[in-house]
Image 1 (cartoon, helix red, strand yellow):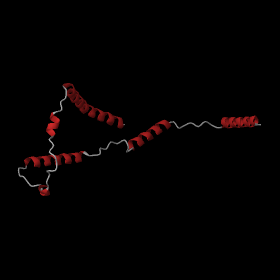
Image 2 (cartoon, one colour):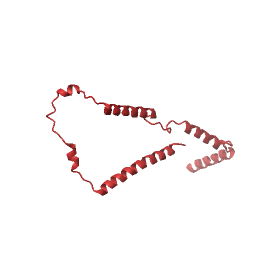
Image 3 (cartoon, helix red, strand yellow):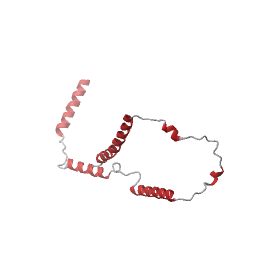
Image 4 (cartoon, helix red, strand yellow):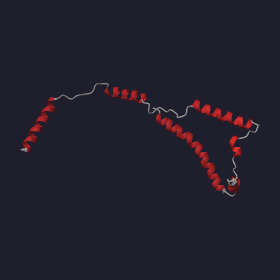
Length: 138
């Protein structure tokens, strides 16, 4: 019984396949699909690089820092620091940072390694930025 049903289904599917026409895509189908993909890729907002802090903001920050440093270095007047003059800081132990760091000594090999690694880091950052910028752009 099952074999008979399977044979009937096979015959039916053969008839349908032989009677149906093969559908072919239009002549410019691939070109149309690729052009639509390129249009969507160019309009995609996810691949556009936008820095978190703009150049204008960096300029304002740098300018404010320079103005603050200039003001601090050029000022000759001494001013009281308000209510801090009334606070007694004698309970805070005196801690000399220079004496702590004066006892630390490094070998020349360690100093050379730190200098070389720092130098390589500053070379690697622009190279990686250029690599990722090229990878993002189409």
